[in-house]
Amino acid sequence: MNPLDWTFPIGVTWLILFGIILARAGGTFLLGRLARKGIRKIERIDTIMSGPKYRKAEAMIERFGAPAIALSFLMIGVQTVLNLAAGTSGMSYRRYIPALVVGGSLWALIYSTVGLIGFKALATAYNAEPGLTVGLGACFALAIVGLVVGLKKKDEKPEHAANCSA
Image 1: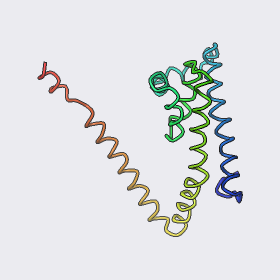
Image 2: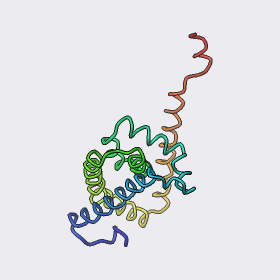
Image 3: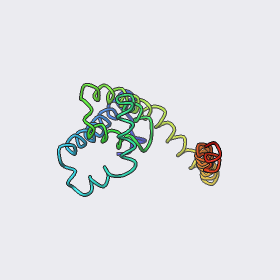
């Protein structure tokens, strides 16, 4: 069931995607609540919860709470782990559910409008000029990697400079 092939109106597509995200993110949160109650004895779950991504997500939940959950739906790669961390850290339903609704609504809106249109545009470009599309995609990916590496180097303080100021 490929969303790119759906012929539904955007409103119906949004409702379907909203239902999917509520089930997926809410289920992940509930899994976290269960994990908090002792399911962590399962090796796979313990491995996930002991990892650096999970620890970082748990720290974000502790510091920022509901806004972190709502914004997680706009960030690729951290949504699931933040929802899991919200469950295991014992975030209250009163704080979690509004964050889930707000973030899930935004996620469904993006993917039912701009997201699907973007995928269609990319597919059309690839069908017209596959080499150019792949080349531009590679340049874009390299630019992002360069930006991330550059920002990490900028944030790191040289050890020599730290010792000189002491």
